[in-house]
Image 1 (cartoon, rainbow, N blue to C red):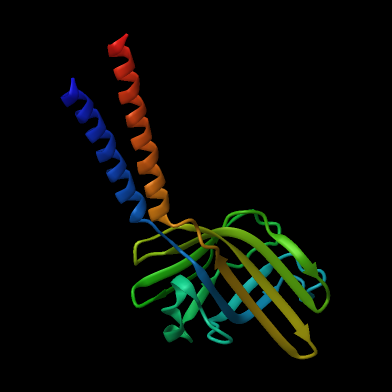
Image 2 (image 1 turned 30 degrees about the horizontal axis):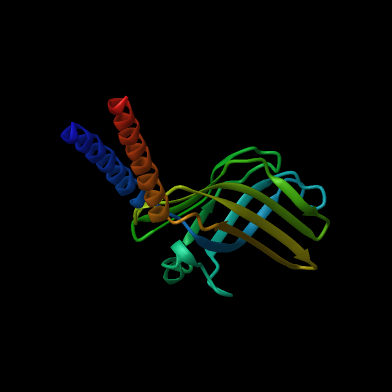
Length: 200
């Protein structure tokens, strides 16, 4: 009887250990990265634009602050070309919104939700949305994040920038610990239930 109970408890703990090992290997992406470049709208007027028809000469913005978190290796890659996908402001998803490959590592961001036009005037355009950030190396798991594209025109000067940010997620080791505790409690509950049945 005791050996059977110990076998069940050992099985529950092994399952918890296996789950915690799986959870601990997934590293969420955190931090932000921003870009500068040139964009062309379908109307040539920010107030009436409904799409970007071309997004060119895009580079990683290294100042102020530069990339952070999981993107911290990117500042040394400043000047590398970034590929942005032109899109209509009514698009529900853009895959990828942007991608950058350097030193064998691909950084990308897919816009997955509807685009929000936060502000649109003849001199300023602010688009926002959500999506999934990906990094091909380093054991990162695809992570939900937000993006913003702002375009402004002031006389003959023109600037365009985009930022993709991902928020920190709960620590995977904490999640694994909670799973192990939960499974342990289930195992102990089963043992107590079994003992009560034997006494009756």
